[in-house]
Image (cartoon, rainbow, N blue to C red; front, side, top):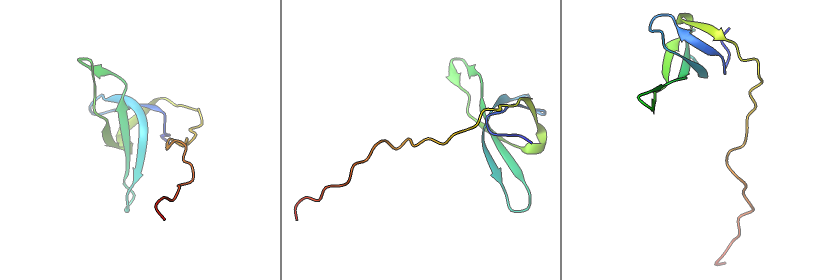
Length: 82
């Protein structure tokens, strides 16, 4: 099974990178989005999405992925003008 954070290679195109997303579709289609682990001419390569069957795991990341709150701190809103 391919997990988020694993390094994979597409067996057809040779595209390599890290798994950043997984999408499961209604009749069993499982698609994996891979972020490139290289730059092309100093510019990041756009992430690509593949069928799970055509990907092979190179390195399985065993680190737990923890969700983080990236919204920043929010105080209670203050009412003004009433």
